[in-house]
Image (cartoon, rainbow over all chains, first blue to last red; front, side, top):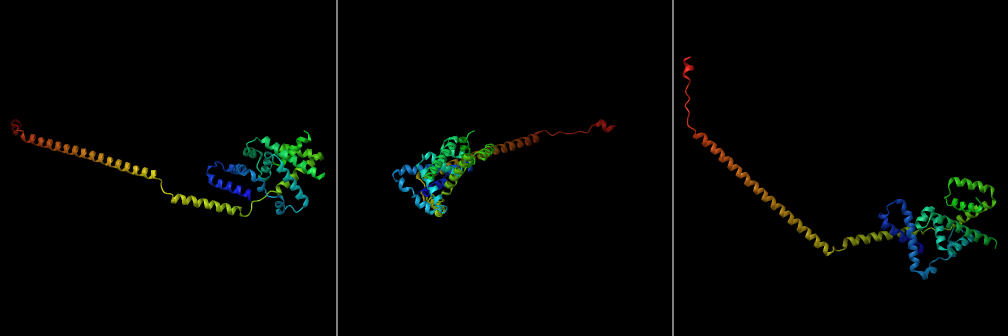
Length: 139
Length: 157
């Protein structure tokens, strides 16, 4: 799987460079930053193959234990679709927050942006997702 | 503060970034505003649904990673042990050994010279002392003999 291959590389790099990381508390940020760079490098290298790399959503959903409920499945689907369509700069901040639990400050450091921008991007993503869900509910 | 600001505060609260003072203000507002309560519910649902869709790495991830690390370590050790030493390092080591040998030889030679000089000085001093003692002896023996006569006056008395 692509994401796992990238993460394998990231952890191998961490293993080789761990002595150079001066502060232990920066390891997490280092991992996310490297993962980000690795992912960008991969997509730059395989521009034409991005579509093939992305796993079909159906398969993903069927393998999830949580998505038994159709409504929930639909909700997850909307969120996923909506995030895919968003500008990557916005969705990336959102994923970093929701999946990693990093603080705004740490995300700002990883992405080289200000903390306020992180705050505003996450808020905007949530508002967009909310609008998409409301639109679906109204049919 | 209007409901738009509250929406942003809800987002910050869900991310654990809202200060305690603002938090109490937020909940005070939520208790009195139905729309914002709906907003809170919606944002919270979105966050929950996003989080449960998070994928875990496969069970083999760790095993593959450690196998890869082990492979790298082996490769490194192998390279380190079997790689021949570059020629210039051999030359350099040779030059260093020669330099150390020359330096030791020079040091030993200068030490030997110093020892020889000290020996000469010592022998000279010894000869001088012997010569002087001989002279003293001769001088003492060459003095005329002195006859000591007893004092007559003191004898009469």
